[in-house]
Image (cartoon, rainbow, N blue to C red; front, side):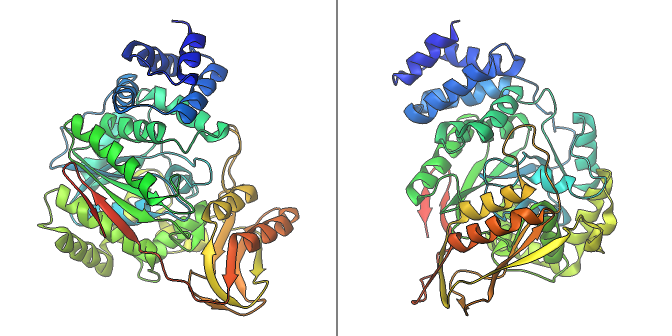
Length: 441
């Protein structure tokens, strides 16, 4: 099949046939289509979109491009959670051990940073010794033994998505509903989970920045999963400011540990409980969401969640002592405050710009081959609605290259808008999407 003809067809707005989509997916998986042609087709899809049939077909072809994990040996319903990505979004490291401590089996295959958003795998790898590379047999064995595992894609799991995912990150083709939906759901179907809970972000730090776009993405993914016969639901949650206060790999691990140890809370914990409550319902452990949230709080208060995180880290070769001493995590050499340029209320944030600021410091990748500095990033000192005096810290930069600090300070000051009037605070949860209905809150 001539890929130039396929690119030109999509560039002109045509719908790709199942055969053309199959050739695209297989060529990405086996490397027979060069990166420049894959990138061109990705950009054409970004501009012209895909209809529901094309998106479902791309999802299934990406799933079929490699193996499918068999989780049938694991007792109970394996449940998975996936976020469309945000800034300071460390929910996986909070809710996975909490859900496992409540008796759920959580078999999670995660991704790396994409664009301005952080990646769970990069966060886990900031823990000394922690590996996200497991064979399928090791993955299944770990979930069976301790109740949870978070790993990267194996070489034969959705190789088409693995190739396209890396290209999207560096070609400006991240924020596209068909590409996001097919990428996420193909991995979830291939990972073998019995039920899926999706966290679709909306707001200034999300891939989809308007509520209607975010609901459309949630709807697309739920519809694809439903067509595949998989129990699936989605929450649309806010990303108008970093979800947690810490942005950067080791910094986010530290915040997750602080939450599980009872030293921190806030929006990150609240969203984790909402998602986790639904995971426990999907796993057949909780009778309803409120019961699920109560069970999660119990695992938090008893310390069982933190213990489970330590078990998971140890099972993946990491130094579980970080759960007792966060000073064992990588730390930056310099901490530099970002002073408020004026007094007033924190009215809004350009959360995407905050994510890119952390990336510029070395917490993310600009090219596929970039190395990540696990120690760098930033800690937010303010939330939306807070009143600040001139000169008061808005955030603290964690930096290993002092020459980057001045630009990062200016970027953060531009990203955090201060006004005279106190703003209305945005909700944390906007909507819930199931195969049968969309409920707006």
